[in-house]
Length: 184
Image (cartoon, rainbow, N blue to C red):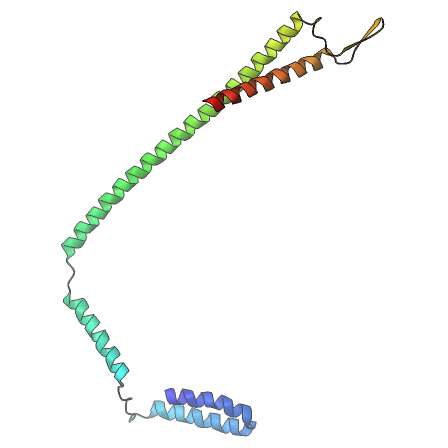
C-alpha cells in the first residue's frame, strides 16, 4: 500500500513533465496495481521490522502491567470519602467567607450613609449658623456696600454675601479636619 502511495506521488511529477497521454496511462497503471492488491489473496504480509516489534512488545507489556496491578478498591473508596469531606469543609469555609463579605458590605453601606448624613448635618449646621450670625450682625458686616458721598450702593445682595460666608466657613472646617487627620 505504501508503495502505491509513493508511486501516486511520483505520478504528480510525471504529470508536470510529460504530456497528458502518458499521465492517463500511468494513472490507469496505478489503479490496476491497486485493484490487484485488494483482490489478490496470496499477498504476504510485510515482514516485521525492528521498530514494529519494539512497539508491539511495548504495548503488550503495558497491557500486562495494567492487568497485573489490580487497583485496591477500598483504598479508592476511602480516598473518595476523604476528598468529599474536605470538599464539604471547603464549601462551609466558602459560605462563611461569603456571609462575612455580605456583612462587611452592609456595614460599609451603613458607614457611607452615616458619613453622608454627618456631612449633611454639618453643612446644615453651618448654614443655620451663618443665617443667625448674619441676622445679628447685618449692619456691621456688609461687604458689598460702597459709599459715594451721600449715597450707599450695595453691590452684593444679602443672599450672595451669605453664600460667600457659608463657603468660607465650610472651607475652613474641611481644612481643620484635614489637619487633625494628618496629625493623628
